[in-house]
Amino acid sequence: MSSTDELPPLVDTHAHLEDERFRGEVSAVVERARAAGLVRVVVVGTGPEDSLACLQRARSEPLLAPAVGLHPTHLNGLPPEAFDRIAELAQDPLVVAIGETGLDDYWKEVPLEVQIQSLRRHLALSRQTGKAIILHCRDAATPLMAELRADFQANGPLRGVLHSFCGDAAQAEDALAMGLHLSFSGMITQKGNQPLRDLAAGIPRDRLLVETDSPYLAPRPHRGQRNEPAFVVHTCQTLAECHGITLADMARVTTENARRLFGL
Image (cartoon, rainbow, N blue to C red; front, side, top):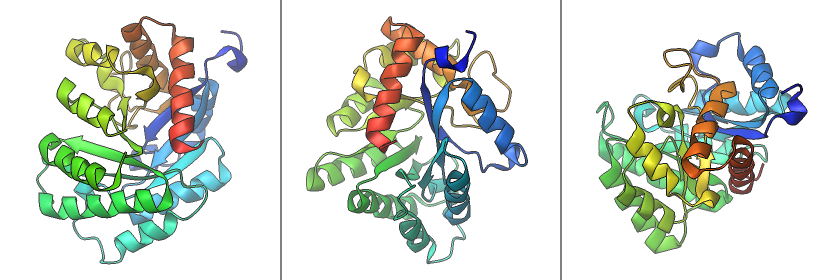
């Protein structure tokens, strides 16, 4: 490809550019993303301070679209007004999503009941603002799907995404039935993840998204490196192969989905 005009448009729907591993390098990372054909990067908050930082950075860098929220593993030690601050930030027109929120029973540092209460507040904020919700799940699919199902039954379809999806077919089917999108990360590119690729092949194209989860989960051929938004092209390529279409076609599909979901 001789110019960025020939690159398929891509959206990285989940990146943590306020992570300390990007300190002092965000401008260069953004330029590499732009050179790789990215048209937007959703930068995701995990607490009050970095949610504000995501919003402030997006004010000066139009490639970035901020999401604000309290990550389920970051709830310990937060002041009582932490969620109120997220709710305030969420009113800004630049903010495109609420989260990331969700449930995590891997680290076991925050009691699940505390996480559930936070999740419920984020779900309500998503509905109040009309902005998509970004959902995290690690070793907590059963309680998370139960919470989402209860909200769905009470309030109707959910607008949002299960990010870095690595669940099973039943979880995927349940999420899709509730209106959610599924986003795939660099995990889908790894050699041992054929079951995940097989599952991805059956997901309706209008519900597919791609992400990096930077700085985590770098795709092949960058495994072991710090991940960054420019690398999302490798995930999109693998997803295209799963669906038997070209990279350019999958890029158009996932970019249109991201634009519709997040109002980009």
